[in-house]
Image 1 (cartoon, one colour):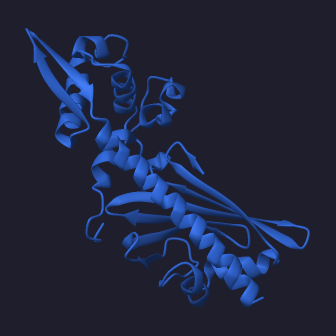
Image 2 (image 1 turned 180 degrees about the vertical axis):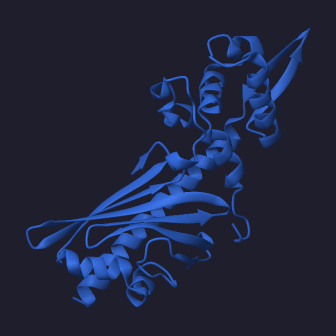
Length: 109
Length: 128
């Protein structure tokens, strides 16, 4: 988006556009997880899950911390709030534009 | 109203569908209520919408035109393809307009062959 101060939505949108990543986000929304916790119930390889996690780390929507020999992943809700805000913005945009359409039609029947 | 990653709005206008359709598809009319544009209601035609400062300038494409009931376009916002669908139906003398703005259109979602898409439906769970 060329507008100054616009949220970097392509990143966050790209993250939630993939069903596996959406599933991972839902899991992490419930609490911190290890790769093995996340990969277990999924019909994809552990390395595929690791790849998705690396991408999500890069986008900043999750964080990683080491605890002993384990690595735990956690959701960064502040980044997903951007997507929610973006949708809320679009929602307000349409509410305003459809009101304007009504006024335009009434003034130019 | 926000449903998953789609923004949905419905409005009733006390004008016939033909009149509302003209407001949705005529360049000059669109500029009056939506935004400056060089839109033409031809499938496959590319156009721009100037939504600054709200959404910036968007590269768009007409995906489907079915006068006077349905218009579907792609609006590319910040490199992210989104789809906007206008559905117009007559209700007596009035028109009902439904707008669906899908921020993550299905055709751009990565395919998933696991066969359990319902598991991923409720993005709001994550966002909530």
